[in-house]
Length: 147
Length: 147
Length: 147
Length: 147
Image 1 (cartoon, rainbow over the protein chains, first blue to last red):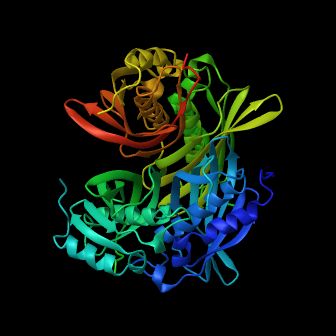
Image 2 (cartoon, rainbow over the protein chains, first blue to last red):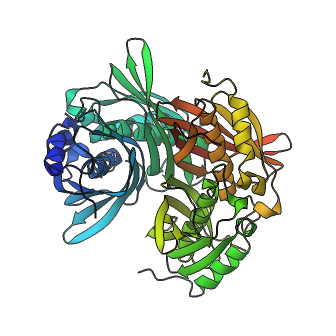
Image 3 (cartoon, rainbow over the protein chains, first blue to last red):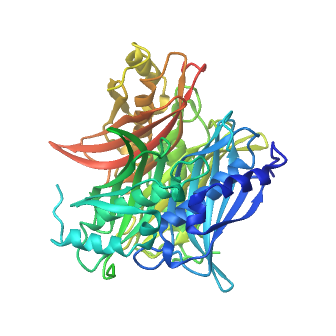
């Protein structure tokens, strides 16, 4: 649906993701990168839980914010970096299971701003539960390379 | 301004916070608890950064979401727990400095829902910079103790 | 996908919509009601414009908030009414054209809260442009009939 | 607190407001303009109500979105216009009374984006009730005059 301005967009996303130490800290992994789309997964561990033993909403926010940000970043020209202006997150169910998968998808790519939507599903056995829903505004920072 | 239903509200918040392993993981500390108010601080470390070396927006979200949630929780009756229904977060400046302080404050305490506002400031030397702004909806889960 | 608790849900929505004088004032029309879904249309007139001659963002908000609210309302039991707790709206393009169509769809029907997503498209000739994107939280007010 | 780039900012806001036909339609009135601040009032009439007889949430949204937008606009240079990128609105109490007053205030004026907060109060007799709470992102459209 979207044609990336930079053919090596996936490599650029992977290199950027690898520099995010907070992603390593929480145990997040980049699973899919496609034009206007990104998926990030996380296997729940005790270290990322809140007081009830579920994955902390902040960790859920972290992976879906990043999935949305990188979904936008896939469409950016080289030499530009991505900034999250704001997002709104609804938390729909406890985040627990074998794996959480956060997906971000571009809805509207603009010249300065990019709008995305995000979802987080919890997988357990063969079942998937919608855990969180996001709507996000990104800004393209031209002339400010990501690295 | 607000009168807590439970006089031992501060202790209840501290015990709940202590059970949040994700707060330990990112290095967050509970600094102030008052009726309808909570402040959480974090000293930036490389482990919580994103690709530009600033504190990851998700970590900023984590502490301000928790500050708002515990601000609401101070007003809850015993035997009730708190759930973040949703929040909206604007990121205003890079999160860096000597210390980040996230503050949450109740705007409207309802019977089922509680609305809060949150702010995160970065402190460096004597200066404070507004880093993030939040508006949040909490739900009171009666008959479901926090512990 | 959703099974309404009340088989006469469409009639209930139509009656409620008819009582909204603000909808008459702006010229909004109920076009489709289905389980978990509602569409509302508006033909732009000078009376609903802002300073640049486009339909006012508030009018766009009004029809998409209502479309989301009635999408939720289709699934409610009789004797319950709907309350918008909050929504977040991104405005993506100027609202102009032959007709605006606001669609609301339930994402997650809960026992107390219902989460919806909404979109507004502007139609001109055969073309459709995405004008606004919404994420919304509704509350089911049981024992408080709509009329 | 803020110093407007254009000394005739108040006149510029008043002229722009006067061109908003939707504001006339709902009966909104500009009451205060100050640097980084704007207040808009509305006297409830049957024409702007929803199905329960309260002022429609969309009308509440319309006046607070405009109050926030004009709060930002007071700080813009001449020859620039204002665009609402997005906002998030919590509805806290039924909008009814003698008068609704929507206030918008700039929190962070940026080079491209401006962040505001808004509140709507309902006045009845001497009492004021908080009816709605908003957080908003505006964009400065340089080289695109408002008129």
